[in-house]
Length: 222
Length: 240
Ligand SMILES: Nc1ncnc2c1ncn2[C@@H]1O[C@H](COP(=O)(O)OP(=O)(O)OP(=O)(O)O)[C@@H](O)[C@H]1O
Ligand SMILES: [Mg+2]
Image (cartoon, rainbow over all chains, first blue to last red; front, top):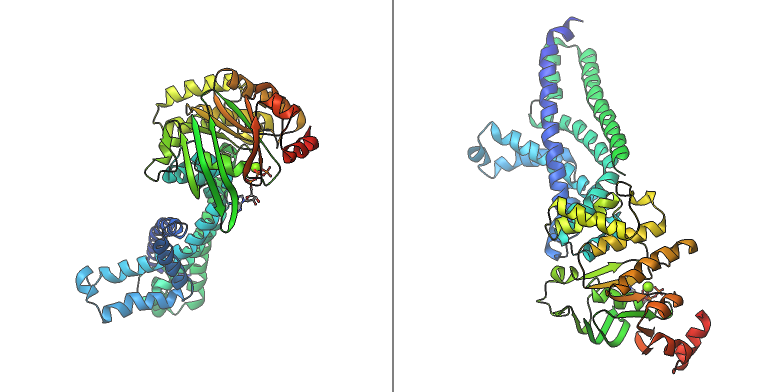
């Protein structure tokens, strides 16, 4: 009991950091995913190529390797630590790499959502003189969004889990703090068990909350 | 109101419209008939820029649609379109379906858009359905909302692509009635339909299309009772 209770504040501090990175990454991944999805569906070929290359590169390499490459590899050839600050760069780079990685999956979710909306909806919007932006914003995306919620929630849960990969590149979060505590207390079983439980509570409440939201959305607006 | 000169449209190597030329006068109701695949929908879709003409010239409400400098969105404000499958915006209420165009495109105030929408819904006989969603309405009701949605933009021309083909028989009449009222009020209309009763009663002119060309056109009575071309004769024999 002792090692847990004494170190609980440290672990909770790690949990706070994990939640912070998760929130940042989830917001960014949706923004990035939306932009990249619209680029993938664009009529402008170079935009499509860039977005496709982005998605394929990030989906076809491991996140851990991406993190090592950008957080630890890049400073070896570029003075990024001086540009952004010795302490800031790893945090910035790690958060951005995580967001880009998750954003690649979100791109495909949003793209599929948009393509899943009946073509007649778009044509009807065009026939009442809506331009491309208005058609997307008021007609296609609201309908696409509803079918995107379940896979997006899935991806958000995945993102929370993936923040644990920030520990190996030296970013302080729940796993990182846990390793510190274990190094001091040797209470490996108890601490890893507790960490797993904390992740479970976090992710389980996210998915419960979102299925509640989904139900409400379905009642209010079909 | 509408002037079409030598309109061609191909999808890849497949030429669907092979040189359509016609003129639709203001307040005229033109009914387009023809076998499946003859290019009726493609022709109509070219008229509001849903399809881009491969060559030829289309002039509507004083604007040249086929001129790349023409603002297509400006032009579409003058050309309403009603689809076979209604295509109501599923996530919006009936009232919102009718107000969203004026509000977002024409930047009309919400109060003004609401007022106009309620008048139009009354006109198509749908008072009391404002807060419903499209899938709570029958097909006939949905199609009447779709007509109101188009009218809300204040078009000079209305295009109808088989507006009653997806409807149960008992709902066809209510939609045709709304269209007839529009025609009587002087709306310029191009209607693709298989409803020969409507063509005869409301149409000023019937165009018979086959294989991407206008084969024959004329006043409904004359064309139906005394077609000149063999292809028209055999088509009419099948459907009349
Ligand atoms: N986007 C498209 N791409 C390729 N071919 C198309 C496309 N749209 C239509 N076509 C082809 O053009 C031809 C004419 O189609 P269209 O829909 O204009 O005929 P229609 O006269 O309206 O027929 P129907 O009475 O069945 O509605 C068809 O053979 C169709 O397969
Ligand atoms: Mg058709």
